[in-house]
Image (cartoon, rainbow, N blue to C red; front, side, top):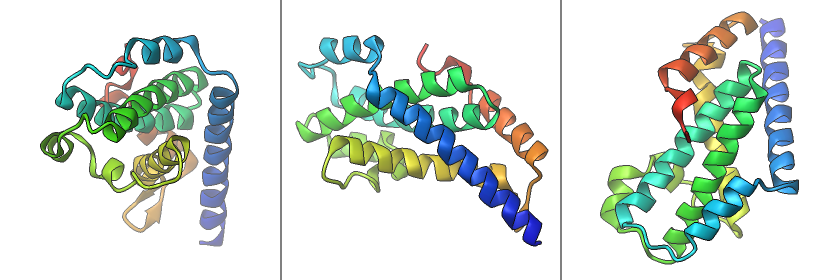
Length: 172
């Protein structure tokens, strides 16, 4: 039982390191894709529902990024993370500008996003959202009921979730 706990701690630590490195590489050198997207949407001219859907797209992209990272597909993990981050930035800007109606938030935005909207800065809030989506995305990957999955089984489950979630299509 003790060795299972150690395996889980190691797996969580490795995942945290990978996510941190993706986060740092993004933070130090923002991609031109994101910059171009933000420049096109600085006027915030989309509908309330379109902005609310961005909250869902962010959550889905972050989850997919975590699964890609867990199956060691670092390029896809980074692409999905950056897409989710971009959608999240626009979503938060629209939310702050009161461009999203409550009915659209209730119907389109995942509860994990709505529970994480407090914080001093946009980056802090996005970090909270990513952390919660990561925790939820890996919950079934790491364990089955009260039993922890082997590392091999974790990779299989993460790969299945990646495929079942159509993650390769997110952001394309």
